[in-house]
Image 1: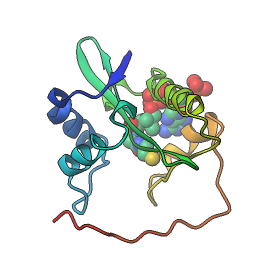
Image 2: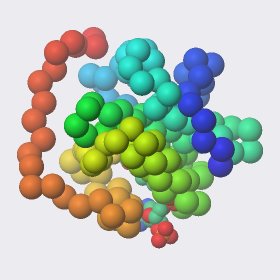
Image 3: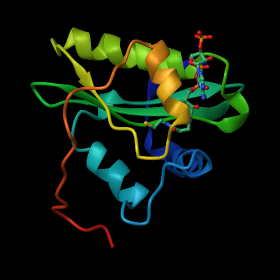
Image 4: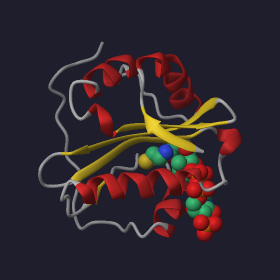
Length: 139
Ligand SMILES: CC(C)(COP(=O)(O)OP(=O)(O)OC[C@H]1O[C@@H](n2cnc3c(N)ncnc32)[C@H](O)[C@@H]1OP(=O)(O)O)[C@@H](O)C(=O)NCCC(=O)NCCS
């Protein structure tokens, strides 16, 4: 898999990938999520290509204190080939380059399958509760 930054022409393939991977939610407009990311560290929005097809994504950001990863996705037909591990390794390298000391990420309740993946990559549960407040509704 070749990893490169997102290009605008990737948009429909990326949204289809997120839908196929069960990452979209009615309250998050994926097109708006992409547009917002393109205004902040767009070089940290990565996609993976294999056999000429877009098969993976990761939306990474450094907020000055922690690094975050969202929308980590590998197309169902391509899972289990090490692509998810490759993308996370690239995310870590890009964050370390920027002096970021720690990655945080959120796993939605019920997405138990992904916990074993992150455990293999050295991620553990933090003693913290995730709180959130919507500032701009997408609907
Ligand atoms: C999570 C996801 C990105 C993993 O991608 P992937 O390319 O299949 O993962 P890899 O092949 O790189 O796996 C890396 C390691 O994790 C293990 N692993 C991956 N998925 C696993 C699972 N469901 N259960 C147990 N182990 C798993 C692999 O066996 C592999 O172990 P190894 O390196 O010791 O052989 C992919 O399953 C996915 O897109 N899931 C749906 C979207 C999602 O939930 N994203 C995360 C949101 S927080």
